[in-house]
Image (tube, rainbow, N blue to C red; front, side, top):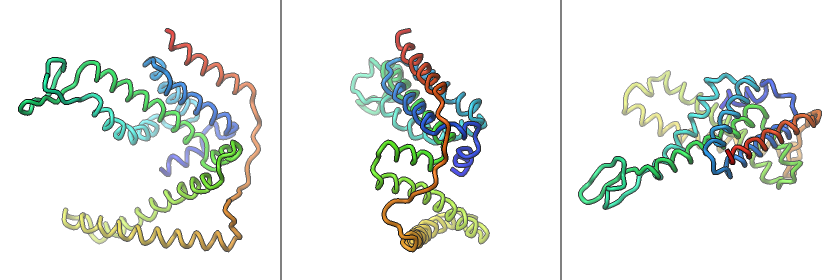
Length: 254
């Protein structure tokens, strides 16, 4: 998570207008989601991988490591599509029989599950491209210009901030427990984890209270305003984005 934020501020495309990166990521994700062609889905996944690594400068291994986080959740979901339960195992390529019930996978279900898997990864890669090239404050600035509700934007910023607070607090508590052999055995591990969770809740609640007091002391009225950088608008970049999206759409007819 910390690496994600670091790359967002230090990538090669940090000086490009955030709206251009936002439009590129959102338009490509939309094309990926509505496209019925697996070629387009693969093209989107490859495009965003190259744009994030070769273009923005994110190390390939780190990008793949980021992609593995949602991959496990997506895989769990598509497995429920790939496998089905039936009393007639005749249409299954392989399966497991339990009494009169067979749990197996047919060719059609496997193809459908694979397509959904790659489509989901393609959409996720678009979001990772935006996250790795655009700081959250700039994303919020773009969303504010698009007239999204200020309450939604404030919650988005606070939640993002508290992700790092929770991670930092968790790391400190775990380090303290480890130095006292809190994870030396299975029994100690379960006890330490329960203590970590309870302590994390209390400290997070306390930090949230401190943040509320700090905001009130600064005359917080329901909206946090930050200085926004001025970026040059590039018509060339928008032309390139339009060309890429049209090219992806044309792949549906190949």
